[in-house]
Image (tube, rainbow, N blue to C red):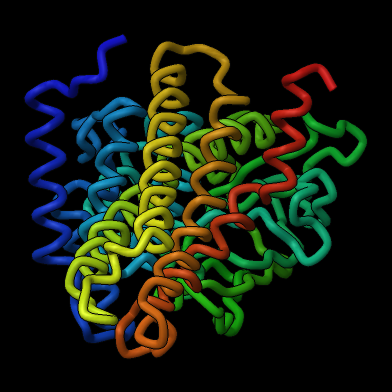
Length: 377
C-alpha cells in the first residue's frame, strides 16, 4: 500500500493549515465574528471541498476532503466553527449535489460553496433521534406542491441558515421509501426558527429547533424523487461520519503537539514532567490513538473513493475518532493539572467540544450496531 500523498495534496494541506491558523483563530467571539470566519472558509474553499469546480467547489475526492478537514481542525481552535462547516457541507450541500436537478444545483451550490449562504440539515425530532424512521413531520401533497407540518430539533446552523434540507414523511405506509427531502428557504411562510440551544461545548456553532406549520413549498422544492429521502440521508451520513471527523483528527494532533510542548517545559521536582513515565506513557497512548484513528479514517475514505461499500469502515472510523477525541481531552486536562481545568487556558474546552462527537452523526451505540450487523450478528 502507498501511504504517500501527492505533491498537490501536500501543498493543498499545507495551504489549508496555514490559512486556518492565520484567518480562523481569533480570541474574540460572537455572531458577527462567526459569519466573518464563515466567509473566510468560503473564500478558501472549505465550504465546497468535494463539490465540482463549476459550482464553486474544489472538486476533491473523499480522501483529500478528509485531509483538508483535518487541516481545518488542526489549524482552527474554534471547533464549533469546524463542526458547523462539516454539517453545512456534508449534510446539506452534498445531498443537493447528489440528489438535486440542474436548476437546484445552479441556484444553491454556488451560494453555499462561496459562504454567501449557510445550509442546515433538519431531520432529528423530539421523538426521533437515532430512529430516523420514527419521524412525525409530514409533507402533504397539494395541487401546487406540498404542505409541511412538524418540529425539528438540534438543527445545526439553524439560527443563521439560508436554506434548510428538511426530511418529512410523504407516505407513512411505505416505511424506508416513505421519506422525502425538501429545500426550504429562510423566510418561507410557516417556517419558524426557535430559540438557540445553550450547550456544554461547540458553543460557537448555532443550533436551534425549527417549527413547520402549514408551510407551503412548491414541488420544485423537493430534492430528488418522492420517497428517496432515506437513501439520500444515508449517503450524506456516510460522508459526514467520515470526512467531518477529519476535523477531530486534526484537533487531536493539535492538542497532542501542545501537550507534548507543555510536558517538555513544565518542571516539577527539578525536572520536566515529560520525563516522568506516568506522563510520557499517557502521551504515547495519545499518539497511538491519533494514528489509529487517522488510518481508519483514510481507509474508509479510500473505499468510498473506489465506489465500494464502506459502511463498516466508516462506522469503525467514526467510533474510534470520537472516543479517542474524548480521551484526548481528558488526557490533556490531566497532564496540565490545575491549568487544564481553568477556562482561561482553553484546555478544558477541548473536552467540552469532543464529548458531543460521540452523539451526533449517529451515537457510538449506533456505530457499534452497524459494525455488529456487518459482522453478521
